Length: 451
Picture (cartoon, rainbow, N blue to C red):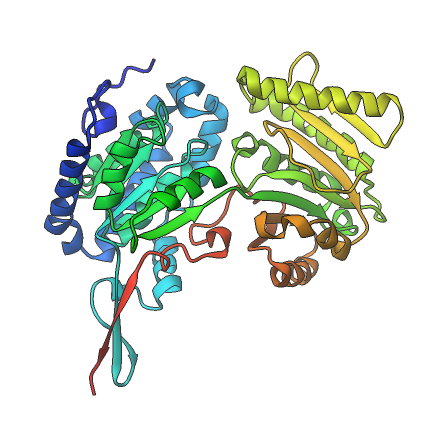
């Protein structure tokens, strides 16, 4: 257990006796603190402090980062090397340019968060964020909740972050970094943890909040939605799946080793956890780089990555899922029925399965990747028809012209995000999660007509 001496949030107080009364009082305090500080400051001040916090987290010598990396994987979900890489990918996006770009993207004029901005010669408009946002935080990745907190601060919203039991370490370390750079920001933030489904605590939190955000499984998101009082604004992000695609001439444009390296980047990042990680990489079968050769080279790259960026230990359940899937494909491979398996020796560290069956398949994750042949993009969309509503990201290896062509087809078909292979788990700060606006889902507008 990490020695955690900081004491500011409810989650810092081990064994705290949480009650609906305590939750109600915390929400009241958050609203008051928001009025005293957050609504009084400008965009420049908030953004500069967020950028300052990010720069601290990017420093190897930052104490809170070192505490995060020293924590056990049971607390953070990831071994040291994987967590460090993920933190760097997340906070490197936190620049003044990117934050101001986000505000301009969402509202046209960033100053509309502070005052009325002109729409036409006789019309102005202003946007308002919720006074209090309640977050039901995901238990798998820390980056989404870091970003959600930052976005809430941009909207001048007080925030109560509810974490699953045992999963609050990284959010509260981030909260303490905000307290260090500007106590006023942290005064509008509360972080607590308890087992999901506690109707007494969650019922009070949902009643007090103006907007509830839930991220997790479809079951979790649906359960939260069904319990909300009428009129509450709700933003939910359920389960999604992602995949890679290698165009037949990609290796001639990009180089084979570059493609392999980028594919490994996506498989290794956050150990395939999260909706942006690929389950399957489809390789066009009539190119020079054949699916079987692609899979063999990818297995070699994953073996090399395990030396510099080890995956870490798994739970018995996770390891068992990989072992069971491996056994199935070993039998298929031994009987020459269209499947070949490459695996790490004596461990479940990584697994690559090249299979002739083209149907999309869910991976057991933790660096287990399927490689499948495909004739062309239209065939892929036909195969994916039953998953159309559940696709998050397609990472593509192709020339820029082909990338644009494929993105037009996939976007029209229903895919919300298309990116180069190797960038699947590194979305830009302003990306539209599930095709929805990152800030505009939360706000309300006030129009001012001058004539």
